[in-house]
Each structure stands twice: as structure tokens, then as C-alpha cells.
Image 1 (cartoon, one colour):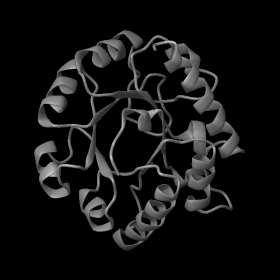
Image 2 (cartoon, rainbow, N blue to C red):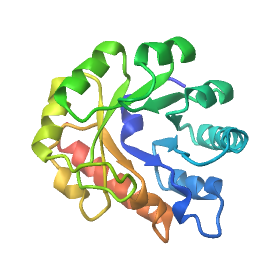
Image 3 (tube, rainbow, N blue to C red):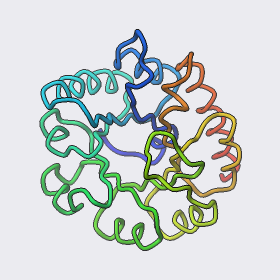
Image 4 (cartoon, one colour):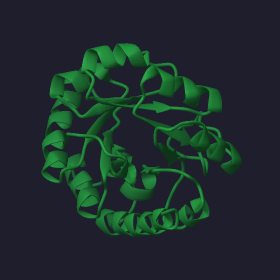
Length: 215
């Protein structure tokens, strides 16, 4: 699937902590029906066989909605299932090695918390950057809040698209108006919702409104 900047508009990142009675696929489909433009499968505690099974199921589901599936951290699983790409942190595999394994067309997202990291990731061949935590976060204990000014500097320091991440929800999203971001990456703001589809639709509408102000 060819990557487009618009696919970062509402980037849903999975977390099975809030699944309740539904399956991960059901939760993801609700997000897709609500307008999620990209999905990242993030699994820290599954065994490899189960992880691969989940990835295969979500890949078929995402492609049915013409949405890319990104795998968090695990380049091996991304390669095995034919995912659209992978997202890596600063301490994970080097971008050049990821590109060698997944090929030239793979989407490679990289976490960047400083301008220096952002520039280095772009130079190494990253497709997009994820930066934050813009509002703090409950999903990563080591994530420190990032000032809006630093986020702005990161967005302006590179030509590749940047997504904001960290504690984003429908209530605080308007505070990011004016930032030169391509989109938002959302975890609990989507998957902890009682109505995932409706909440995703609200986020998509608000994100559309924010981006339209920069056209």
C-alpha cells in the first residue's frame, strides 16, 4: 500500500487493556469504521505465535478499509505477516537495518523526542516521526510530557510528517490547533472509550477541522 501523509491523520494504537468482552479485531474495526486512517498493533506481552496471529487478522481487516497496518517494534513479525511497516523507538533496531529487512516501500515510523533525534531519523530514512508525550500519558510510565514549543520545533525541523502522541483525547485535541503536525496517534483516547466508533469519528472530525485551518 502506497504511503500518503493523510494516512497519519488519526493513527490508532492498540492496547488490549480496555477490551472487556470484545476481541482486539472488533475494537480495531470500530475504530476503522469511525475513520481511523492508520493502525499500529502494539503488543508487549504476547507470545510470538499469538502476536503473529493477531497481526495477520488485523492486516486483512485494515486493508479491507484501505488503511495501513504498522507493527510496533517487532520487525520480524512485520516481515512475516507482510505488514505495511513498523514503528521503532530510539533504542530499537537502526533504521537502515529495518529498511534492509522490510524493503524500500515499507513505512518506518520513529519516535523522536528532540530536534536532533528528528533530524537524524529523517536523514536515516524514516517515513514519519512520532513525538510526545504532548499531554503526558498513562500508557507508558517513562514518557515525559513534551512542551508544545518543543513539539513545534520538531515539526518544523524536518520535511517528513510528524504525529503528536501522548494523552490525546477529544477534549484536549483543540489545544494542538496551529501545530504543523500531520496527525495524532491515540491509544486510550480511542480504545478506552465506551463507544470506540463514535469517539474515533469525533477525533477525525476535529482533526479535519484543525488541518483545514492550515490549507
